[in-house]
Image (cartoon, rainbow, N blue to C red):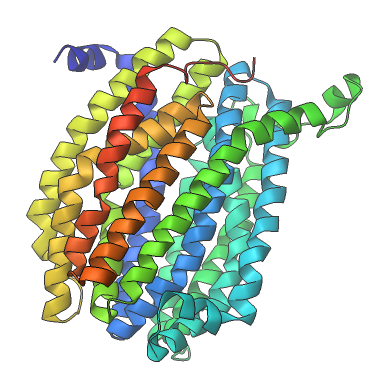
Length: 465
């Protein structure tokens, strides 16, 4: 109780936290709501279409996690550089991250466009699902490079505490996506009826619009104190004065030393989670559809908690970069207490709403029952899962303790989650909700060893000193 009294008394901490959290939550909520709307719209085409789009998007899921690693690694550095007000180094971070993100996207675009059937067959042996998923995949892959640019800019802007511009950008994208979904999936408003291919085309057009609006707003925006303008239009004079290239070896060493473990973390974790999909895809369309729906609902339910995590990573990084190490340690304690208490409330809310939420989807009674039970499992693990995310993604990474985060995430998935999925789903043949509960045992492992690592305080350091 003393910790909650400390939190309530620290008005500055609460104000700064929620000033960043709320815009991030709004943006993420909008993104996840449009995913929910997509699932609802595609759901009218049948369970095979839901399963096909869900599995096709696993390619993007792996890529998005890899990009999350790039953007998270860049955010760690840019947050600490922002604490020191070193704008020239923030621009270096942006340039290197863009180069990596767009370059890596090609590794996903090429197989997704030229070999969509092969990609889909990795996730499911069902011919109908492969055919539908391939129609979606050959179009949606062209949105990946645009996503790389958007994610990189947004992560760097957030680390500088500019969190309102991304909301405008996301809102434009979502409106376009929903309207075009309505037209292109069903053939409304004079558009051709394209089914799942229409959903992919709508998303691609929305990403193009998002990309254009992002660059326009960022490069035209003038903040009141000029800071954003300075960041965007930063000249190279400082680099020239130092007698070195703008992107020099010392900077690259620091960048990759910090970001590489994060990128590997997200990629290996994402690849591991994708292995779950290989199991789900072999448990039948009912299991795949139910877990696709459950994951979509989860993303909406967790959006507030992920917002707190992102705010914590930014603020802790700013404090560590400005050598306020004791303040960062105290605020990390606040975040853990807040996260656990709020997640308990969230878990109860999910349990109360599971029936009405599951009934929103036009699915069979079997899928309805599976979704309801999967949501129950999700709610029971929710407090542990959110605290784990806070410790690994926000606290440890904010101080550059990225190798510990890598080990925790990768070992939990590959040594616990995947063996549990294979055992329950393929060997024993248990129902989807039981397999899901077995996989979630990995969260208990992460909580124990993540908290031990947090208490060692190796994350409390200024990595840009």
